[in-house]
Image 1 (tube, each protein chain N blue to C red):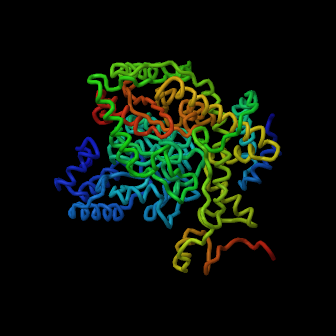
Image 2: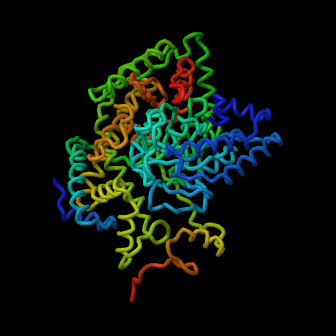
Image 3: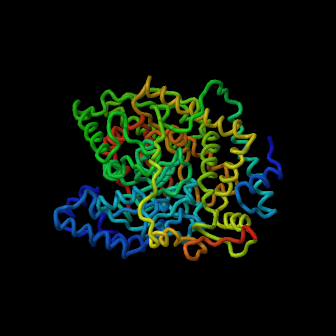
Length: 507
Length: 102
């Protein structure tokens, strides 16, 4: 196991680094070795040891001068949809197989400025399209808990790398559940913040009105460390927010809110969550939900009640409609975003072709995988003259209705919403491949949040009773800009449970 | 409303994706399956509901920012070379493509 695995949190590793008990270089070297030693997981796509070690040396220099930034020497890794100057960026697509970005994504540069050391780039579903990491041009990622099971997706490599202990944290992106769902299936914690709070600049685009970056780590405290650094206004992203209600959108906001929420919890001894109303949406507990997951969620709700929270029944009547609405809007945006791959300015070009259109069309057919082609074609269809009103505008109207359901729950009944992340635990790699929409239906509990742009997270809350137990995730959904509150509630849960401390090795 | 072979050909052409005849047939089946799922939307009464394009418009007034219309800095040939280094075919600062105009 890599050296950083001896530390149970980013802050304890930070203390050891600052006390010179260990160097960033030693940490980076052992993390690189561990990552290379677990090639069976297929979690990493690109590793460049020299770049990693150079970052580690810079961290050590800053530490020696006592000028270390908050994440100096902390080993992380990026989903391969964040463009990076040194490492290739492929979005797990053949069409970008040799792409090297001339610039860094804002999330990447912010983490580098904070001193974090990147171990490499992580496998994912091609362009973020998928929920099992099977749609990668470079092969599926294996779940560290069970090699035949999917790690979830699209940020499957990000979740697997944290679960296997190869890095302390990773970056992911969430368009319809792509941070929360793999976090759930790999037994780690992950958060998708409010849309517009983290810059999308330099993230390979999929669905621009939905895409949002978020970190994955073992527990909520470590998520605070990363999310606090990457949140903030960025003039390079036209949908980046300058204000989060009354607070400026800048680094420090998340930590401030988190600390304030933690302090409020201390008021009533023994009942830290006194007064917190937890909404439990009845539509999330229908016949499609696996029994073992329903039980684990029920147990988790009891823990929250024992901490003083009050459980409230809420209704999100359009939950089911979020599936067709999402699968119109996301493909429509994808068909527009992915039109940039023209085989002229960058990316894969086919070997033999006739005219310009033939060159582009053949290159795209060979360069994109089947799921990406499917979504581009669906998106093109629903945007066609004659169908635009019936599908695209109708989906956007339904989107507002889905969003209003959440707003009604928050304004009238509850402070946060708790439910499952997925209806089933991880499926076997290769299962359901014949029916492309089978996996789409399993996104039912995550899509509504994405359509609404709300912050939500997944934390481990149990395991199946199988011989090879698989992790179960708990979803916490907050109102806009409530990341700090969400993380504080998750942290409180993790103080009295140990699901997040389990590792595939101990099992 | 079923998707016809003609629809598939039209959409694939618009999306600039060259499908083989077998892929075309499979795509037609798949798209029809997907449209069945999407068709559910048609039954929803959305009278008077404003389409939502920005998720946070449920929470606050959203005005998309415009930036000043200014050229980005540093237009050196080095800079150009870096930006063009991912092109599949290029020469002297030009992207190479099949002849468009004889």
